[in-house]
Length: 274
Length: 299
Ligand SMILES: Nc1ncnc2c1ncn2[C@@H]1O[C@H](COP(=O)(O)OP(=O)(O)OP(=O)(O)O)[C@@H](O)[C@H]1O
Ligand SMILES: [Mg+2]
Image (cartoon, rainbow over all chains, first blue to last red; front, side):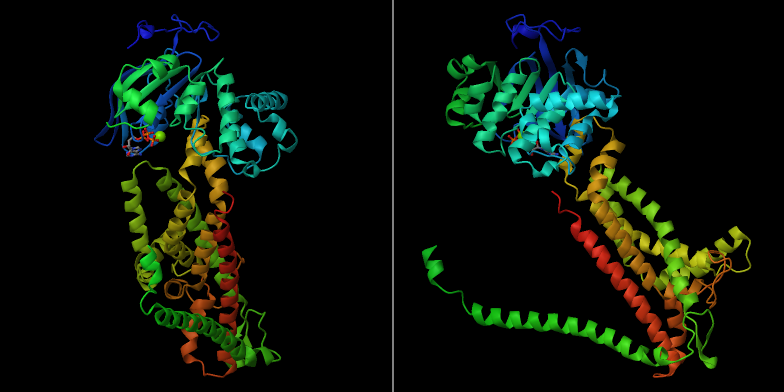
């Protein structure tokens, strides 16, 4: 564990800018274990994810990266047989104890999945989906939708066809719509589970740029299998294997000074023997 | 690879040809059978259609006097079908939602397999239960002398079509890919919103298809209805009074086909009623197939 997370931060000012050693943590995970039935996927994992910036979660398939991510916003709660132990705090609030209404947690922590998934309705209605439970006037809603689409670099492409079915967009555009949809809720943390895995390289680069620009204001946790991508966008890299953290650190540390052999082989050969 | 490609599969061509011919003949045969049935029905309806004063649209059914008023039966069929739908649809839909929303796949599999068993129970068994119990309960509940009324038939049919409707509805709901649920969840929607906003719009044509198929089944059911409907060839009065005895096309056919002489006007009138029934069922089936096939085309 690095020294960063030694003191739990209970009150975090949203605008704190410094990303240096004093940077507060967005997510604190302590003694976290995840199970499917009796199968222990992650055991006793502790991790601190810094506020703002992009944290990339690397690791071979089946290590439990998605499982970890899906517990951060408790999506896994509804998965059959899934359970966990330990504590997760997001911006100082315990995800289990401090969010009796899980939907509140999910509105604060956006999530974008591997496969773009737009609802079979118009682009506008897709954007509206998460905003339903906020009491907003029509013009406020429109404003939020416009800003979010602009943030997601999609506005120029859809401004004149907001009523068109969302399924008529290209996959890359659909993924950006998913991101915009999440951004409309003004999340403090965004979770990405291989957001570019099913998208062509050019659209992927658009999304990478987008992720980087968003990371100035939002803490981003991104699972990826793409080492080159990690090199391009990560501020912080966490390498997981077999339900454990092997090594973590800043991007420069991980790509040049990785101390662990496993990390080095994985980063150079994308292979891991564990 | 190359050796495999070079060797023609042994005797495949002959086999293939025979199989193809067999399939073709079967397909042609089944189409022929349907065509034959339909044309028989149409031909045999001739005598009653050519009668001048058959009074088909009246309410008097008296073959001895040459009166073939079919309205009570047609109305009875439709009325019973509507009651069955009112009984089955809300319960079926709610149960389907419950099953598809439950976290436990064990429970879901259990309920599904029980339902599939239920769809296999012969209708006469339902009829027996209807005569033995339902009929008496209904009579007591409404303080009637006899429970052999339209309502009883409707409820019984509702129970009969419930499993069919339920399994098909549950299929329609659970074939909506899980990722829609997860994405909606990630946006902080509540469970009921997720269902209403993302699942239902995608499942609704499947549910509509299930409903149509189920009422089609209700329409064609004979034995169970015959035992509990009271078999009275007249329109209820007031018209939509479910507490009066009645008659459906099927129960009428079930009772009288045996005693009518082949080729007579009486027989022909019965055949014509069955033609009406078949037409309604065909239309319902076509509509339901349209809905069922549309089920997943948007993704
Ligand atoms: N719903 C589930 N029920 C039971 N086991 C599961 C379930 N989901 C995942 N697992 C198991 O948990 C382990 C970790 O899965 P997870 O999806 O978290 O891996 P991952 O690191 O995201 O892999 P990938 O990189 O391939 O996405 C795997 O062994 C998987 O088989
Ligand atoms: Mg994964």
